[in-house]
Image 1 (cartoon, rainbow, N blue to C red):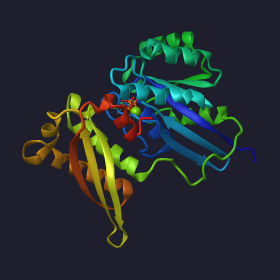
Image 2 (image 1 turned 120 degrees about the horizontal axis):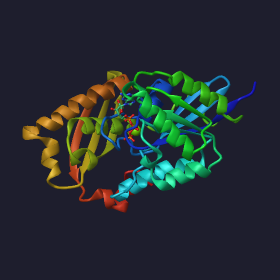
Image 3 (image 1 turned 135 degrees about the vertical axis):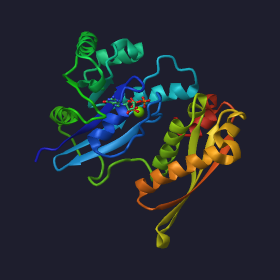
Image 4 (image 1 turned 90 degrees about the horizontal axis):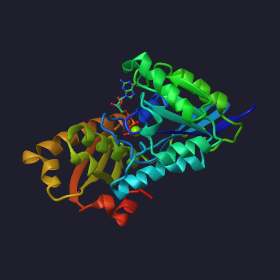
Amino acid sequence: MEHRSGFVNIIGKPNVGKSTLLNALVGEKMSIINNKPQTTRHRIFAIMNGPDFQIVFSDTPGLIQKPFYKMQTAMNKFAYSTFEDADLFLVVTDGGLPEEIPETALHKLKVTETPKLLIVNKADQLDDKAIENAIFEWEKEVKFNRTIIISALHKINTGLVLDAIINLLPQGPVYYPKDQITSHTERFFVSEIIRNNILSLYHQEIPYSTEVVVTSFKEEEEKNLVKIAAEIFVSRKTQKPILIGKGGSSIKKLGIHSRKEIEEFLDRRVYLELFVKVKEDWRDDEGMLKQFGYQ
Ligand SMILES: Nc1nc2c(ncn2[C@@H]2O[C@H](COP(=O)(O)OP(=O)(O)OP(=O)(O)O)[C@@H](O)[C@H]2O)c(=O)[nH]1
Ligand SMILES: [Mg+2]
């Protein structure tokens, strides 16, 4: 039997629905989704297996036009690194024009011979004229194998995307064991769940100044319980009391929301402890960025 496989890399501007599309395609909550831009900060791998195919999806951080912090430069690097291994690109837009991504990225897309699909997402909230115009402008700049109009949120036409991917996959080996669906650890997913709850519960700079590190993950099998401790790093002293809230009310809420979601994810009871730490300007600190996995 012929086996098809490959790296399918999802790129585009922040907030266009890349992570929503990944989750819709693989049918699992692999990548966190939030209405705030710059939600995804790492390259997220999700593997989809069939008897005669294996798709290794990569969700990436949205391409930032003018990185301000070293952290954002590192996020762009994750997105650019997909040009080194892609067998297929899903270029996602929510009706914007090609200039919405950095010139370097657009140029890379123009010159690469790797197959590409243009995915126009959020069709549920776009009018036909906007869709038509976006497609016209993108196709003028980049040669796509196919353009598909979808709503990742409502799973409209996501099946068509999957069919198009499988059609364009090259013949290839089994890269990962067929029962594996990701290369990330449970700890990583837990930290992402907490970070996503910070994105949802806090405002302004707080979510963007925060990093979450799971420091302890102890399974107590006889009790069907996991004891988790996580550190939340903020980049200024003044942010610590905001994160904690009056009498600890905000961090308590964060703990409750996160614990529920982690319990659902792990399918076990969870005891969660959160600690807030200040690491001044960590987003520009190469040592900290390395420690947080940005390299
Ligand atoms: N109306 C509508 N909203 C959508 C659709 N797809 C995604 N969204 C919303 O768009 C927002 C951003 O979605 P994400 O999947 O986090 O976007 P992203 O491109 O991964 O964003 P970054 O990780 O920040 O680059 C969320 O509020 C989603 O619910 C869609 O088809 N229709
Ligand atoms: Mg994302």
